[in-house]
Image (tube, rainbow, N blue to C red):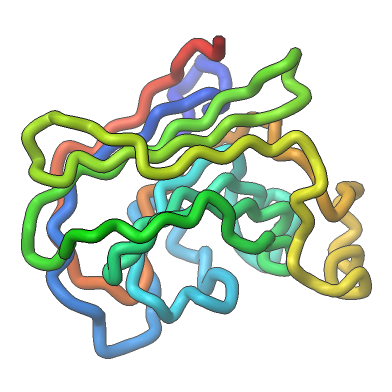
Amino acid sequence: VGTLPGQEEWKNVEMTGYVKMLSPTLTTESSESSDQDEGSEDGDSLDPHLTWRARGGRHNDMVPCEGTALNGGLYLDGKVSWKKEIWHTGGYSDARGVSEIPSSFINKWIGWKTVMYNLESDSSVKMESYLDIDADNKWEKVSDVKDNGKWYADTSDEEFYSANCGKEKDYIITNSGHTATFRSDNLIFDFKNLSIREIKAP
């Protein structure tokens, strides 16, 4: 979802959608509703999952430094988590805010919502994710992460700094981005009512 003409880039946002996870795919290809050249994510991208993400632009090898993102992940096995991507693809962090949901997601409609907003004069960022497990508009917070530093890219210094993006390994993604993405990896699913809106940070 690109920023609308004449509007400020996506920054403090709420991304919401309803999905029905059906089964893993038989290939390792990924799909997304924007930026068809994005390619694979980090090492666990083979696990079937959805990612609602924002705060970057294109994610490809031609413009690696444009590929920043905060990634709210929902996995077929019931796991939720957050990761950040400082550059594409050598700037992924480990997962934080990991929760295991004691309910099957398979073949039922559920709501998935990710929220990100800056705090403390744009020096830190808060990430929250919510599930509407019975698709009845009753949302429960399932993950809550704050990044104010010391959340490092999970790659060697040699690989991380090879992109020359001018960012530190624990760069806090407080920046805006012109593209937000509703992404899937290795998952057959139905979806409806996808939305994104800018919100006011506290």
